[in-house]
Length: 132
Image (cartoon, rainbow, N blue to C red):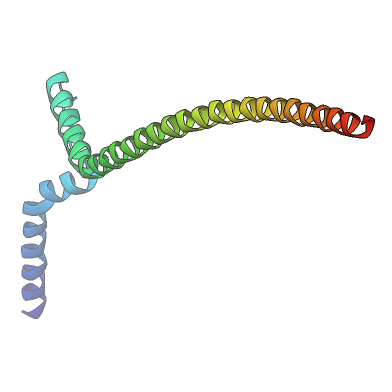
């Protein structure tokens, strides 16, 4: 009797295995069915999604960079204006220095003429005084 009981159990196990055999066969032997190739619209939509994700990720840093560039451009413009003003001041200072140099040369010439006239006058006065 125990032998028949064991044989019954074995038969039941074989029946259960028979029921699950198709499922086991599909899991073990068959590869999953391939998905159909994506359509152009699906690829385009996925690409647009990825682009928007990247755009959102980099938008804030790009805005910060744009703001920094704008600030740097404003500083550069201010520096250019300052350089232009300094150039104008240097040009004016050079003109003024040239005028002063010319005036000093004129003053020196007039001083030499005055001193030579005074010297000649002194010599004439001494000559006239010593002659009498």
